[in-house]
Length: 321
Image 1 (cartoon, rainbow, N blue to C red):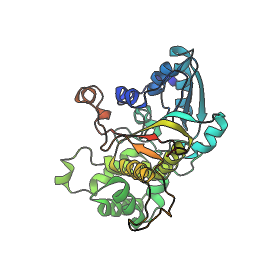
Image 2: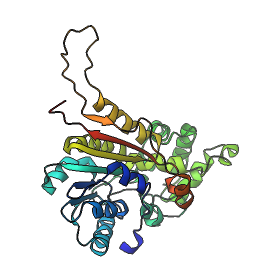
Image 3: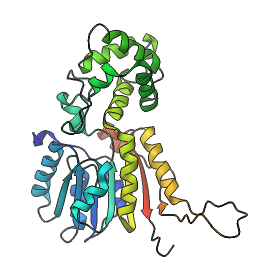
Image 4: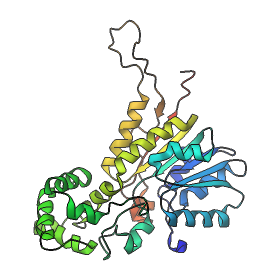
């Protein structure tokens, strides 16, 4: 099982450069996956540093443990099961006073896409699942498709998938499920195709890509989890600590930009106030005014890096600000 959980780390050189992990530091990979990033971070903080890893997928945790024992046996590590939405509780569990490097590599990992029974892929037939953590999440993509009303389906497809044909697809879903439930990925693909004009289906990649993205975000509450996880990471970061986030679509990237921008603002009082009464101080310094992207060479070798957008912030020492 764990042998299948291989993940090519996206923008690895940029992650190492921007996080700049040093011997003895504490690093936390909030999206551990197959530990592609974490192993390289661990090499740089070992043997006196600590590598933390967070993942809600048991397969990922097993694969990461096996890889650490094989490749960096000298590295102290603690892997924590859960969603980074609960980062506060997980770091209390890890018994660390603070963290020097945080990494969030968002989106679906390669193994989740590649294992058909997880239900994330529109290329393979499987039950409509899409849960990152099946043991703790009762809501599957099938539940959403077969029980949400037409208006809610259209909203999800439009907001989370940026799908221009959201209303047409939602209407087609409702019409189809009236005859029989939509239960598999390829069934849904055919329904989506039927809801998109033929001329549009010939351009812009796979016609179901945006619908599947939207469902995945809805099923796993990804945007709410991202905001909570980011704010927790800033709270736990040591002064000078680095926070690196790799996003894969505009919704995620806008959320990261919003949180970093908000936390980098100082006084918001009107300019004619003689003294500050709001008490706001900048908590982070945003290092990336525009997101970094993967090199052409990396995209050629790993097409999943094509949509990657990286933003980085540094925790300020607010005690001396």
